Length: 220
Image (cartoon, rainbow, N blue to C red; front, side, top):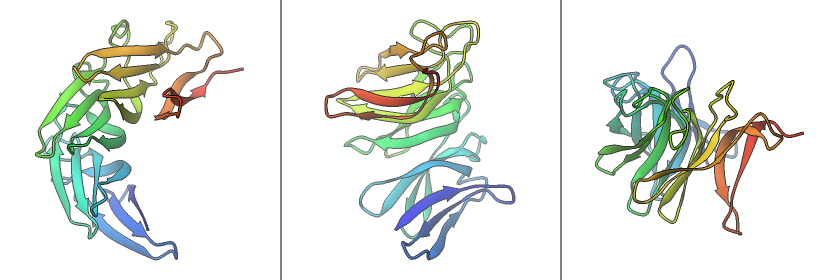
């Protein structure tokens, strides 16, 4: 059976279930306030009948929420974001072995262009990194718009940004947040070469230990 998020004008979004035979069940309709609105990203299953995801809007500060849902559609808000923590959640949540959730936002944070955050099982949320904005987003603080979610490997988080800097030769990055919290840029993309730019989608780990991804622009 499959589940998913849906959102459009006339409501605040829903979570649904559909069987291989096409039988549809509406599991939860968001109320636009306490449990958020405009659900985004995939549902993360814990393998025990529970699902986790986030909304882009709603909550006490209209910044979205992280929520938990049972297979029966009972939704509990784990954390409601503030603008300083980030809003407009993007990508998908990932979890570590202890149940901590990790995700990204495309707005909010120190420069209002996105964050990487960690949400503990009790709802405590920590901003691991706030992205910068043009022209103050070079060196170890790339331009914002984290895109495609995160990947966890050996205690480090990996992700991409897809921000265009126009007159500067940087159009997206691959980054890493190490277990000690330090932030690194592994690679910067540019429209001025044929290596591709504007990375999208999550990174995946290959059998060779390397990271694989795609760019929506560039090439030959």
